[in-house]
Length: 525
Ligand code: ATP
Ligand code: MG
Image 1 (tube, rainbow, N blue to C red):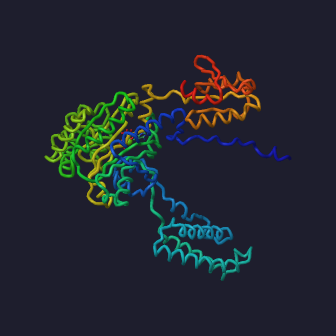
Image 2: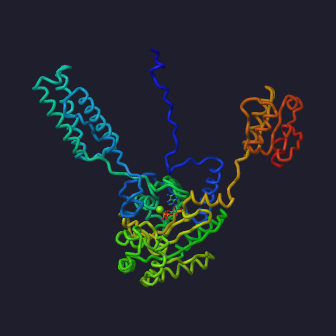
Image 3: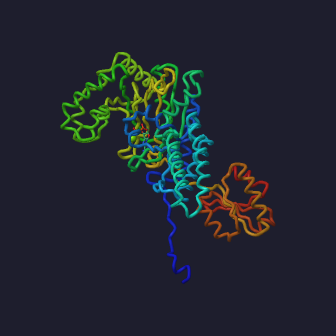
């Protein structure tokens, strides 16, 4: 029988981006770039510098800052323990000595040694001892196994006993090695920025330190319009210095300026104060007590939140709950004097800057670290996922992460949603057009064409130079499809006469231009 008849034709798997992730492609990426470029420019005018923190951090950093009982940390993080996966020894048939079991153990010991040398296993003294004694035991085991002749694995009692004992000892030592800690893909970046502020002693710099970032975030949420598992945020943080209300107002002013510059439509800014360590706990208790009284009328999510996070009940979009929530005590009536004064001053400062806002007493944030000023911005065209920006003050977060007492405020913009909203309102660039398409024919034209492409590109024109010769009709069709503004026609006639034919594709007009004049004339067109 021939090979072909035995083997079934296997279709190669067609790969697709993982659910909740996606490819961003041209021409859409041009809009992403414009948005990011605008952010850099606007934030720059407010004195912010860029920070690029890593994509993964210790899980504990997020658990401590975002809050271990929040949805983000509790259910949505991509968490893994790289060391554990690499160095866990799984071998179900391990107890029966066999050449295969010995090989497996050998490979495992080698991984441990390598992991320790590379620093993937924390270089502690006790780990070093464990690795050393593991290597010692393993070389004893190798010696013993060499004396077990192949085929004698089932017999030869004295050696087998020694082997079994050493094998068990190796496993016992390996289990004492403390592996690296759990790490997570970042679900947000504020915690990382605070970690970096502490790690690099930024409190020594002139305060406040103003930083912005942009990049991917990861949350295991149910994917839908405007909600992805890998999504992008553009955010900024102000750390250190005072908590003067003007800082809160300026941060908000900056986001609003950015959105204005992008001509984002239907922008609505909601603000609130959620109190501080003095007044919020008392309010939360009051709210919890009131919620317990109406518990039966609430849905399961809200019922659960009465105990875990009663503020989040205010966030509920469940229709039947709305009239109940409206009657609940409002935080505005329970702020301590300092918080009430601060909030009033933030509003005055916003007025001073001409920033329009709506007060929304039900605005709370899903992350634990916020206090006092909180805000959210919505935009049009996004359906139920219409929040494009969330932010607020988080004095005390740096301290919570082991740093000095530090004031902090910041925001995060959902870039995917921002882009969606811009596209919905027709603010997106339509297509990625070429400026110039060079339609050349004949070996004589080639050198001139290459030279012209170089000159024009150096001057900033986007130039398409076909790699192989094609008939003029086809070339012009291609130029049209690519959205080129001009076609430069160069055939034998043109080479002989030393003049290009420049065709404006929009109206079909043509003119002759000498090679020397080509750049100049295109720049004037
Ligand atoms: P939402 O209530 O919409 O889930 P959130 O309170 O979880 O938002 P934040 O953690 O404050 O959001 O993040 C700030 C912004 O990041 C949001 O306003 C939103 O624009 C965007 N964002 C959050 N989660 C996602 C996601 N899974 N996909 C796309 N954008 C997101
Ligand atoms: Mg969310």
